[in-house]
Amino acid sequence: MPSIRSSSETLSRETVFEMLKNTRRRYVFHILSQRAEPVTLATLSEEVAALEYDTAVEDLTGDQRQRIYVSLRQTHLPRLDDANVVDFDSEANTVGLAENASDLQVYLEAVPDDDILWAQFYLGLAGIGAGLLLFLWLDVPPLSTYPALVGTVMLSVLGGSALVHHRHLQRRRLGTGESPI
Image (cartoon, rainbow, N blue to C red; front, side, top):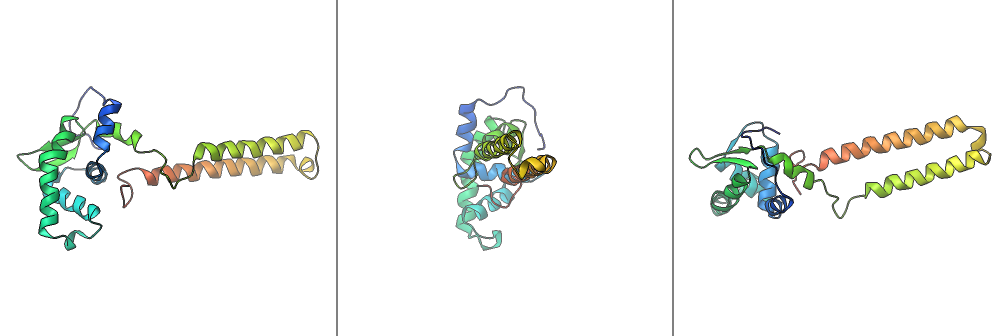
């Protein structure tokens, strides 16, 4: 994430939760996370409105654009700027990420309701591996005749699962997909 301004303080959990409890602020973070440079407030407002109204920027009404613009300018961007999450230049009407933006990402990687609990998945794999290992120790055929194959399969399954998990987490990060939530 680009860093526009610097601060030696990290955000408290309470501040992070306050920043992220509003969908519009999460949209701002998502959009800015996709940019290397600051954007104009007008552009940011249009993109937030498009996400919020689930429509294309071209299909937004003037009222929809204005409602989001005013809300961002008067409420959300000053709050995010005070927490050093964004750098909001109210005179130039530009917005970019600031140093504390990286503090928010950790809290956004929680497991959604419709997602797999990876800890339970890996615990299940460990249980299967322990069961196979027990069968090998007890010389239970046919596993006992192919111990290298059993080890290779388990290592492949574990490595493949870890790769899928890593890719899944990368796609779930704000700023990397089409939808921020």
